[in-house]
Length: 279
Image 1: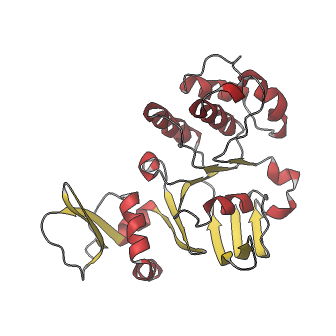
Image 2: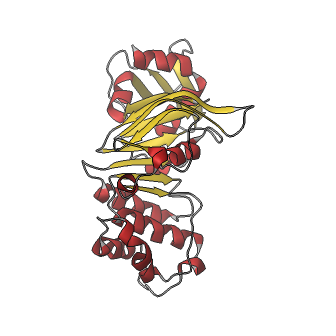
Image 3: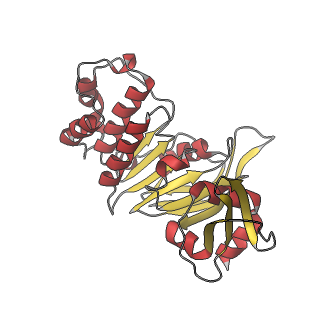
C-alpha cells in the first residue's frame, strides 16, 4: 500500500534529512514509527500524505504518486497531526463540513467513538475544549472516516491515563485486514500492546522495519540478577529488578518484546542489530 523508493529530502541545502530512504508497508498492520527528536518522523508522515515533496525518488500510496495529491488517494488517507487544527464548530457540526470528503465515513461510528471517550455533549465548540478533549474528538473523527490508510502523529499526547486505555481499545476495534495504520510516537509504553510492527528511523535511514514476532525470534529480552557478560549482551540497563538485557536469541527463548528496551538497544548497537536482522 505504501512504497518509498530512494527518496531524498531536505529543508535546506546544508543538511539532508533523508538520503536514499526506502520503506515498504502493507495493509493489515499497525506500525509504530520510532525515532529520536529531529529524526524526521513528522516529515515522513507529511511526505506520505503529500504535504511535503521529496527532491528525489518516489513515494507511492495506494499506487498513486503522493505528491500529486489525487482525490482518489486523498479520500483513502487520513493524517492526524500532533498539533490539531480546531475549527470554530460544534462537535456535531464537524461531520457536516468535512465528512463528505471521505466516502466511507460513518456517523454511527463517530458517535460511538465519542461515547467511548465519554464526550456526550455534541453542542460544545471544538475550539473551546481542553487539549485532551480536542484530541478525543479528532481521534473519533479520524477513525470514523474509515480510510484505508491512517497516519497518526503522537496521538496519545494530551490524553489522561483512562483515555489512553480507551484509545488502545478503539484502535484495536478499528484495525482491519484492509487498513494500514502508522503511528509516530515517543510514548511506547502507551502503545506496546497495540503495535504489531516496528519501524525505527535514525540519521535519515530506516534501521528496522520488522513485525513483533520476528523481533522476538531474533532477540531475547530478559531481566537478570547480578553481573552481565558485556560480550554477549547487545544492550543492558539497570533497574529495581536487576539488569534488563537484550541478547541475540541464539537458543530460541520465548520472551516479551519491550519496545523501549528494543529502541535503546538499536540506538546503542545499530550496526550489530542490523546484521542480525539481515542475516
